[in-house]
Image (tube, rainbow, N blue to C red):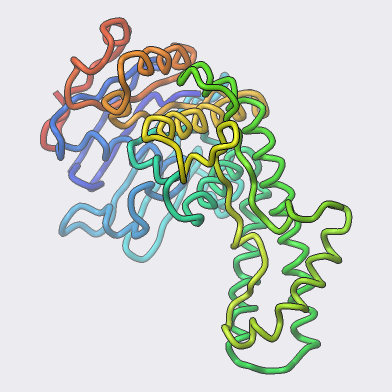
Length: 362
């Protein structure tokens, strides 16, 4: 798949933008603060219906405007689809081929992208919620049911925490709530475990080819992985939650569940978050992102779009060349840079060059 066109109205620093994109390689060049990353952000928004940089959609609206619009034509297989997003401070509407999409989970499977940016290093170095967000977004791209289950689970978790805060002893209500909570939790555990196994199908070889270091893998850290007999997960979780109940009443928070999940990067026997060099850590996250692309390619039979935000400036010459081996013209690539000298001449020769200054294309 690839983006054919992009139209923006009142998005970030753009009053209006109408851009035609090459199906293969696009290089967006300009000084910092001119709007390069805003273009990638809008494409990410098309795929995920949210920004990768901030949580509040209102921040994306250009100053003194009432809302923004994003529109794109996207080639998927033999079809050209049109996406239109209209966002105001009060509401968001998503149209796919002129039909309003009311179920976000179904929409998230339609458009597949993989984003590289310098802050991706936080997937490895940051807090567990960043890694859970990565899993949630990545799995939702290949399985719409995951988003729906996760949404249901989060509602049940909120209800359960609110009940715990009341200090009530309505055990019949709690048992009913826990029945549905555990049902959704197990599905999430299983889908996350399967996805991490899929990552490990690819990440070792990718890391070896980029970094010349072997044995990288992802290790899932969860209650589910601590249970040896996975067929007994329901009973084990029921027992654990009963054991935690008195402490939960005191804290007002649910102790066990997918909201506590995490994963770590292991190279050989080394936890890269704790003991890896900056180069090893960066290479591991890049390998993770390429593994994400391979999963989409293998399990959905779709080539995702690569969005690369000034990634090449973060790599030395050898690793930059190794990275380029994975970025072929089979994929659509949309990358940003402040200086074309940072990009290989071969890539530039094959690319459409888009120059940006103060929210305008030249």
